[in-house]
Image (cartoon, helix red, strand yellow):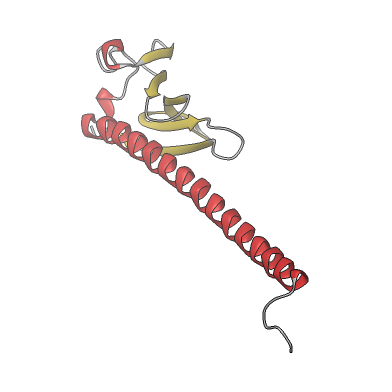
Length: 148
């Protein structure tokens, strides 16, 4: 009389194949989680940078100056560099991001014929850490013109 069922070797083979398949699925889930974290952080940084750019655009050319009244320390701004002509760099925190820090750089446009006193270039950078997999940066740039 022959018994029905699985032998020990067949059972071990099935367990090994199942283990390999589950490992592959776990790797996919890990990749998806990392991708989701990167995407979320990029969205947060983009949103902050766009908000800062819109503040400057709404104020116009004359309000795009590095000054404590425009960028008060009470709102988290830090003046990193201030020139006598109102240009320079300002830092701002990105508290929702790990070690998140942003900078606003306001300069007069310099072309081949020299400095254009009626045109400013505003560059906003945002950077964050988060391990070797999820650090990142984003940069926005715009020009503001003085319409006499």
